[in-house]
Amino acid sequence: MSREITITIDDKKIRTVEGKILLWVALANDIYIPHLCAIEGKDLPEASCRLCFVEIEGKNKPVTSCTQPVYDGMVVRTRTAKVDRLVKTAFELLLSDHRLGCASCPKNRNCELQRIAKERKLKLRHTRFKYLGRETAVDDSPDSFSFDPSRCVLCGQCIWADHEKAKVGAIGFARRGLGRTVATFNYESLKDSPCTECGLCVEACPVGALSFKKNT
Ligand code: FES
Image (cartoon, rainbow, N blue to C red; front, side, top):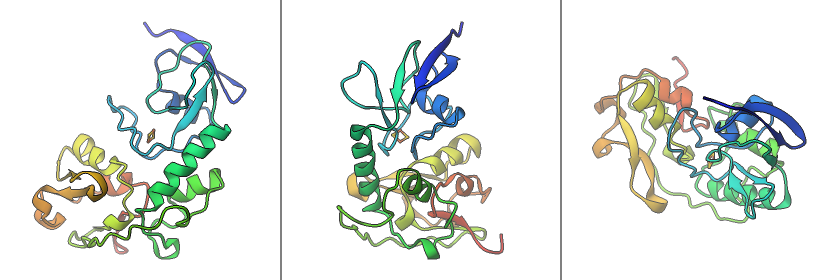
């Protein structure tokens, strides 16, 4: 049976249920923690974006809030020098493989990267880490949307929507390391893949990688 507990996040006392994931508890209580790859309801979190770090009293290292279950008496800080440093580095690394140019991006003003930059006062430009500038072709083949891998942050939200909501399985992660990308089987165009153009993956994309065409 689920047990009611009390935790504290940034001095705010919160009643919740033991075992819930800290990130979702914080967000449900209007405490913002940056996050890209976390998906509510997914059993095994990717924990790949490394943006959701927090510090917990009694633990000697910051932890990712998307993997941390809550327990009674837990005391959490979302903003400490260590957390801010980790989040800044993760954000800068992410940008090193993200083509900027917000003015011409379809998600301008509705982009999770812009939100994180604003909330954490981070620069939305390539600073410490040089832009990798990988050559990636835009897949413009679907009638209703296009996919620009150079704006993809590899959060996996589109893949989850495609597999778990649409139950199609047209896309997945391909390759490892710096070459990692979202792709169709055999790298065929989306038009030639089993994609049904339901649009759920486009709605799930938190940045400008998947975007509806103007007439859609
Ligand atoms: Fe926790 Fe990405 S949201 S690591």
